[in-house]
Amino acid sequence: MSEDSPATVMPRGGDLPHLPPLRIAIVAGLASGGTAQHVAALAAGCGDAGVAVSVLAPAATLRRLRSGTAAVPLAIGDRPRPLRDARSVARLRTWLNAWRPDVVHAHGVRAGAFAAVAIGLTRRAARPAFAVTVHNAPPDGPAVSGVHAVLERICARRADLVLCASADLATRLRTRGAAAVEEVHVAAPPRAAATAAEAAAARDEIAETGRPVILAVGRLAPQKGLDVLIDAAARWRRRDPRPVTVIVGDGPQARSLRAQAARQAEGDVRLLGARDDVPALLAAADVVVVPSRWDARALIVQEAMQAGRPIVASRVGGIPDVTGDDGAVLVSPGDPDELAAAVTAVLDDPATAARLASAARARAASFPSPDDALAAMLSRYARLATSRHGQSTE
Image 1 (tube, one colour):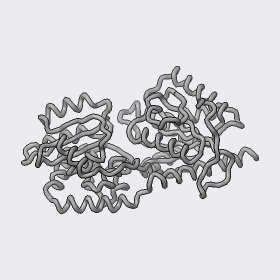
Image 2 (spheres, rainbow, N blue to C red):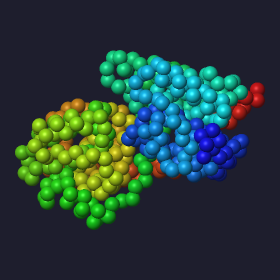
Image 3 (cartoon, helix red, strand yellow):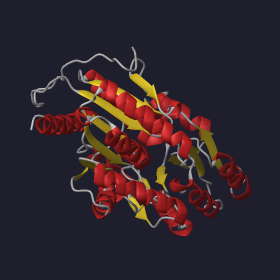
Image 4 (cartoon, rainbow, N blue to C red):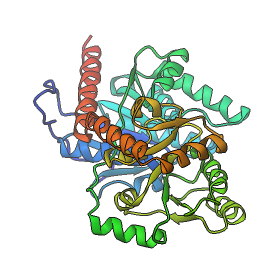
């Protein structure tokens, strides 16, 4: 399928208003983890609903898309590069003028700023409605956080709708000038539950008989706080039996975290890299730990709750909104002593572990499903397109 001429069909779904054929352009930057999963799932869901969709993003992000999704390579890096960025904005403007989507939905403030500038440069008759989803808080460091704040202001003031993955992000974007802000539930992708045999095989692989398993799953990046988990693991090494701490994922900190684990944990922390058997690993875990310095609606928290696992997580971002008061033990971010004390308290008290697991599973039953989340997004697209069509006829 050509990037400039994907099939245009009518949206399906009884609750969507009658519209001309919808065209949705999803613009994303260099994404991984939950954001990349969300973009891929949203594009696939739009296609399944009969909505014409194209995704414009760097090649690494496009590789996550389902086969057959219309994909347009667009260089949006995680650092400013003026010449490359100017070319990308020009390419995006040209593409928007040619394809004329009803709605542009950008993910992340860098992609949002690129889209805002490109939309402003398109022919007035071709300008689409514009939505931005903000998935993350600003990075650490005065220089990069200052750039992030500028990008936030551009998105807040140019977008017709700003969607935020947690309440603290919604508050932040309102202070940046956004007039229309909504929280959005980024649903965990559906996964089949592990069988007893799969869970037993995973446990046999990662831990000797009788040793408790502590599991963390996430991108190996500073935001996820996995260095704090390794520090905490050094504090429970003298327990009998000694817990095994298992970290699943890849990312820029892989080498430094492996070195830290070798130095501090002497084999009791095992980094497995990326895995496709997360349900089995969850079933094998005694405690799931999410030590993030910041997170929105962390997908691994949702998955662990759905699997009915005891969770110890940081009290940051949107995590408390997901877990509630009883779905996890919440601790201060960046404190290995508090984290170690919480994890060992769960390991030492089977009744507490069972209560946490039951509460997590019960709360997870109320989460919007991926289908619910998709229906809500399609409804937003229809609303935005209706508004834009109305403006174009005035």
